[in-house]
Length: 285
Image (cartoon, rainbow, N blue to C red; front, side):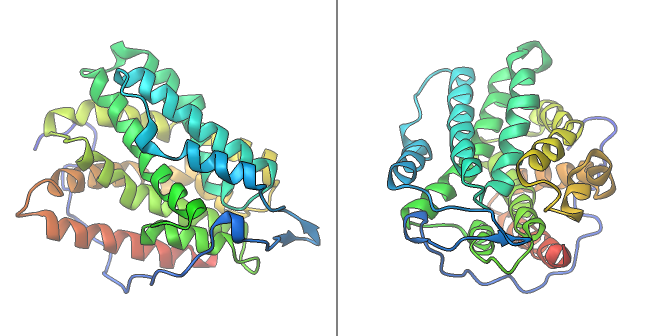
């Protein structure tokens, strides 16, 4: 498989050791949660109203997205994510710690790029990639707020967000881990990516990698410096130091492998190993 020049070619090198997966915890839907997080003696969260929970459930229902051409559908999906994030931020809800980052990148970096369709060989592919990445999150938000099914990686993030004894940075990084190590390759697979799509995939992901400082700025605007070292990890230099470009290569390769019955099982093991290894690594944040 020939990938875009400048990216690593070995998609299976330097695999992290396989460690035990974190068991899924039970978690309460927002309508039932009445715990208030406190940081430095100050409340950081008030319960959402029933109307807000209902609105989040409506917005996160991916089955109601319009069957428009891919760019209008992308804009609608991003608008839904943006409104969900606004609701969570209004309450300083800790489930906003990741949603803030995803929404900020979509609004500040991804949408402007996607609207410049000349940037891509296949604009429709690029649009569908961004839609599916958001949908991976929205599906689990819908489960969280509706007391429905939540996949283990996101159950981890939401369970931590309900634990007022943890740091905000720990909660946020659980979300970013779920997004980068699992959602990305699953999105690549879900839209039927092929090796020829590599250029457009990396155009989107490289743009994100160059724009991560906007996450830091907006997160500080909402939570101050409460995320601590996590903000350093989310900065441009932090992403580069964490091997973000290398993750992009591995995720694309795993997304292709998930579509191959002969490679799917090995790809699932590698994805699980990456998620588990990073979950352990960020526990000290």
